[in-house]
Length: 195
Image (cartoon, rainbow, N blue to C red; front, side, top):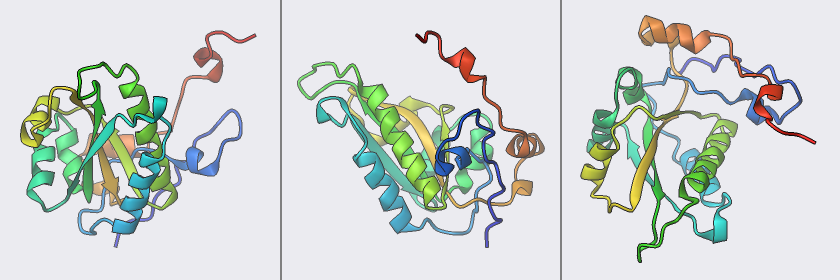
């Protein structure tokens, strides 16, 4: 049985939806429980219905469940501390941007639209009780090779998905990060112009 998710509600300057204030990126994953397939399907459905320019939907996902050869290949693509914890996640999802159409026409908004799809995925998963952590620390070329991706498809992030686990299973430095106060720069420093 997994450890209950600790309260990591963001100290927002202005009220936001509870699902947004409560969403965070843990590294402690339950290494025993399989993914709830209905919740995973719902998160992928939320991603599918995210906005995209001209309804082009320039995103693809590789979904790798723990215990499979595909999951092991994704873990092998991870770098640094990510390999110390992410393998415990029930699922690793590789988010891929389609940066050009089949005829070679560039899709200039691909990464923006992929980001929206991943955000929708993350918020839906959190709403349904799953935890999600996105990682940039991976080797896209390793993914490109094992997935046999055409050059126009660019792996952008790896997303750990599953149930919250025991913080004490993490290396000590990551345990500290897991419970450290959540911070963001003030909104006044984020908005560069306002009239």
